Length: 405
Image (cartoon, rainbow, N blue to C red; front, side, top):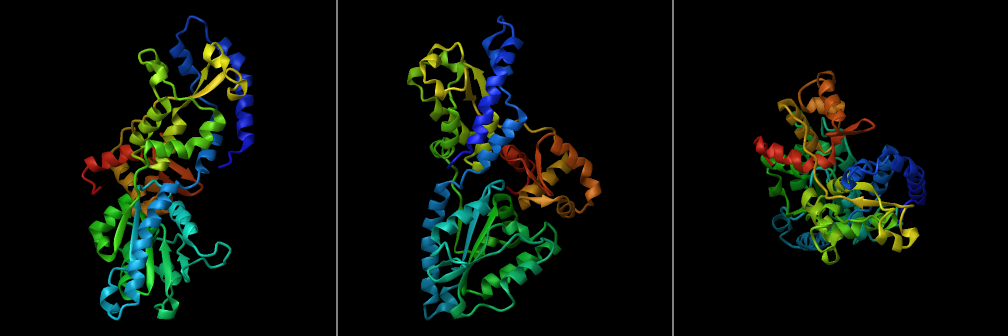
């Protein structure tokens, strides 16, 4: 992946400008650790720019490999059943494949990358696989099933019109209410009645557990695939373009004096810790990686002086400290239900969130403001979601409060 050179140039310029003022700001009798702590915060703009680069990372290739391997077998079983004389019996439940990811993962991007890897002709206006058109259902209004009905059409597809239907974010077709499940009820009918379509359904873990409890969704599927957690080695390779461009180091100053540094693979230790803290979830790992970055003064480091000057940023070095999930602010019962709704649907507008809670937007406004201020909730335009960095902690909290997770 190519990282925008303008960002790195601006970051280097800022570091050059700040070096003298930072050094003058601290007296020489302060400890190295205290100085390091005071240098840990990058400017807000630089952090946002860096995060934008992290968001542009492609879907991890291991996801595509996992989905392709499962899809090949499942799709083959379905095609065999379609050609069988006893199609009415053997085709039952063979036409549905469910993909489950952590609820803060960008599953739509993962499925899109997978689809791009299997389509017959990327230049075609209508993507196909083995001659079957691929229809991807867009995000839809969640209060009813009309959008899904319109997308799929009122007629069942014939033998000549077999196709692959992909719903990357099934959570968008229902709200946590009786009326909201109309879209799911419609979908269940179509899954059973229309075996000439091959269905790929994607949803987050919390939504999966909810629909399991409500409609036993797995009984409609040939297979349910859970995305495997990313290992430290996989995360390291994935984020390497940014690490290399910024020459980020991973040595631990607090441990280097106690351990033989020459025999320690600091980068391996860091990414193994990142995998553990993020539970192998890509979006959580990205946030933790961003939060772990700090600027350290290496102008007096003899080892640094021996290195090529082009590999350092004018006496300063970007370093990643040990990744740690932040502690979650105090939450009351209403906060817990609100966060559960966000995880259940992955993302919601304020109106939709209020509807899912049986309240009005006015009633939840103060609550939302508090959660946004503490950083637990993120907002992009009109859309709200849980900040991924809090996902492991919130999920543990919900499980401890007897939510079905």
